[in-house]
Length: 376
Image 1 (tube, one colour):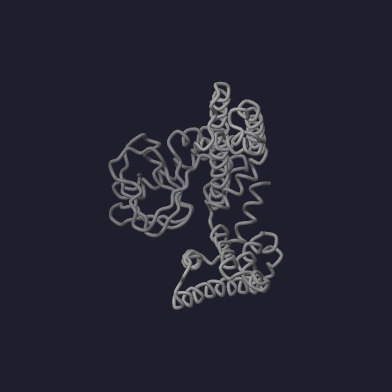
Image 2 (cartoon, rainbow, N blue to C red):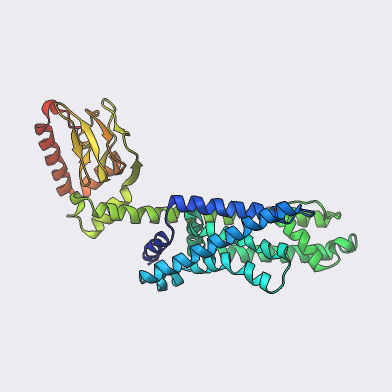
């Protein structure tokens, strides 16, 4: 179900956000706006500079207004207005447009109203794959993260209460109340250590040392959960992409769903630009390749052979345990699926019929290629 939700979300964002050029323009607009907001807060600005800042700020706001209107028109004309509203992107678009005019309309000072322009940073978050991945990880790992938060709060309040009792006689200004002790507990638990509040009694220092150790454990646990979540999300994302690519390779169409899942987990996706050497003649072969998209050229005599989507190469070195006998280069931007030697043997052991087909096609190529140059 999580995979389905991810794949449903991606087309909506892809439709709303034009691509790399648009994101670059958006980044430039946001950067210019933030610089103008920062300079606008400086006192005693000359009139000429204030006029220029107003032009930049209103220009940035006009850009986001035009973008929001164009998005609404496009998604509505394409019948995707409901998807747009469900995706939550519209909230970010609204926050980039409405707060500043509303604040100015209610009489807020111009400097304070334009400070709301920092919400423009959310526009970058809406088109950033990393932010989207972080959101997915937080949703998936919500329960473990909530458990860590509960542990953090428990240690925080227990430490503050303990220091309030132990240190309030020695340092009434610093630890005389629970809110004051909470500041020390936050600083110590997060291992920030500002040094503005330090226990002076022996028991207070013992408690402080225990809080420091607990802080390391809590944030280590938090880091571990997030790191594991990012790894698992990457695996799920790669699995979905490999699944789609594997289904498009004719050689795998005879596999049942279990077989497709197995090979999808084994394959590594390799994105290569044009004119990139994939296989070098004379090197030991340790994997075979399937062309998911694009094209490669196998340099054999008398004429090179070009392989397109659905073809595979590099299998002869695995079958014979030998070296590569031909150079292979991409002629177009190409996506390859790589099957390593160990996975190749495991897969062909589980699916002997495909092993027979690989060997048959390899022999056929070997016979058709003059001088045997096509068995990489």
